[in-house]
Image (cartoon, rainbow, N blue to C red; front, side, top):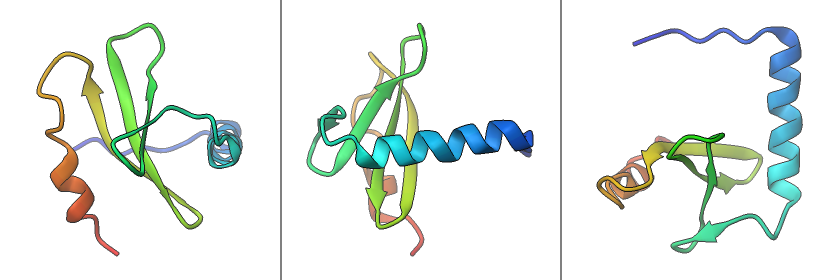
Amino acid sequence: MLDSNFHPEAEAELLAAGRYIKGDDDYVCFDGEFRKIRVGKFRYNLVFRIRGEEIQILAVMHMSRRPGYWKKRATTWPE
C-alpha cells in the first residue's frame, strides 16, 4: 500500500473541499446517505458519506464496473 503525504497547501484545499461538500445539500446523493462525484474527466466516481464532522470515502469506483461492490464497506467502517 502506498503512503500518502499532503503538501500543506494541498491539505488546506482538501479541508476546504470537505467544508464545501458538507454544506452543499444539492450534491449528488444516491442510495440513501451515500454521495458520489466524478473524478475529473475519468470514468471514476468517488463514493462517500458524511458522518458528523467526517467525510468517509468508501470507494473510487469505475462507473461501469461492478456497481454496488463497495456497499459492504459501509457496514464494516470502523467507528
